[in-house]
Length: 93
Picture 1 (cartoon, helix red, strand yellow):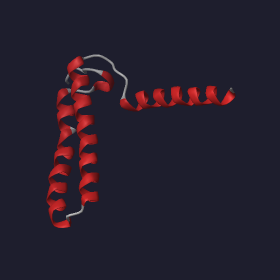
Picture 2 (picture 1 turned 45 degrees about the vertical axis):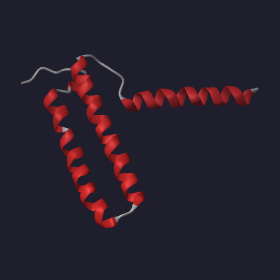
Picture 3 (picture 1 turned 180 degrees about the vertical axis):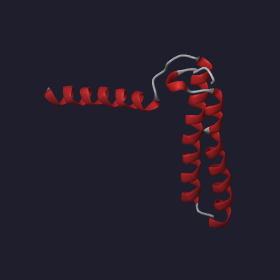
Picture 4 (picture 1 turned 45 degrees about the horizontal axis):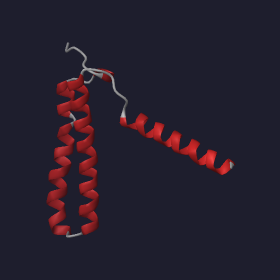
């Protein structure tokens, strides 16, 4: 059994395997974008591909760092809590 690297037991193989659906999605969207010729479809496909690529890169960096890091979701939640506190503080005045 492979040694666990990083948080939640991510391994290099698992991080690379997560890239397969992102690559397949990109190929399929490229094939569909040409006949559809829709800028909105293309924009959505590019944003979705970018988000998937970011998660793959995040997991690869997590494996490379071999240490625990906050997940993107927990980072987002921390930002939302701080924003909520700031708004509440401003509304009290």
